[in-house]
Length: 341
Image 1 (tube, one colour):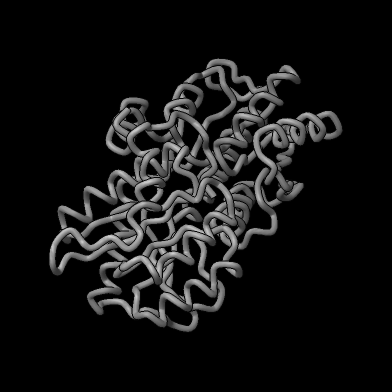
Image 2 (cartoon, rainbow, N blue to C red):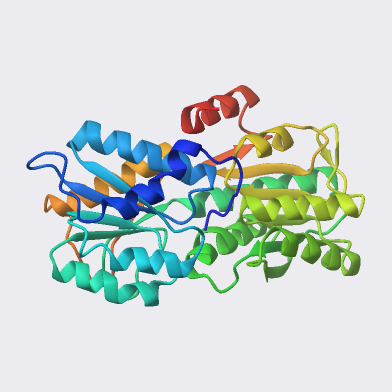
């Protein structure tokens, strides 16, 4: 559900073509493992970095070849890619799928061929394959807690009214982002009002219009969790249109905003003392890629069961990038280490 569409790396863009051309090709050398590595959208800088690190890390640690499949932010394309696994001479696959039900027949076919199958972010229906997830819940809770604390310190007489923009019907988004964020806010102010998660699945422009409409009707809203960075672009544009989205030298005026998918654009806003975007979840592409590769190799090597009921989940670290608790130079170093920028 990481939906950014920012700078596109030309070399990596070819990976989807490599994937299509490489189906059925032999392994690079006898005994090498061949892994299909799915990303939902290769135009997303997180997935670009993740794909590059997966190829490097798998070769270095396991002598394995990684073939990247680009889902092109299209559920149908992702499902079609799954259908190619069984015919593609792969030893294993780590999937990133938006429509688990549609992908299930292809996953079951691959399992029947003794191909090691794992998933990223969301379990695949009742297949029971292992799932790799970022530990988002702890970061969402902490962002909610910090925002509520900062608001109460600045405006002790103004009640907290919070809202989330995201995917209200998505199980993993709710458990990793929406619900723990609310819990974090309530840990500081049990009387805070929660307007719930508003469906922003149509993207940036939808998020902008939602914010404009909501704050026209409910101007007292003061804590906003924008649950993906592309939504945050729309959220901040909507706030700007209303003359909001500002701090006064580190002090909140009308609201505080949290985001997900911290990157170089959000870096400038989080550490701007006059912007209301002050915290963002840092999802590390390098560590995520390594975790995903390790998990599918553990299945291949018999260290993790290929299928269980319920599916086992394996969590990898996420980071709280915060104006209040992470020094700016450390955030800059984090970006350099994870994205090379």
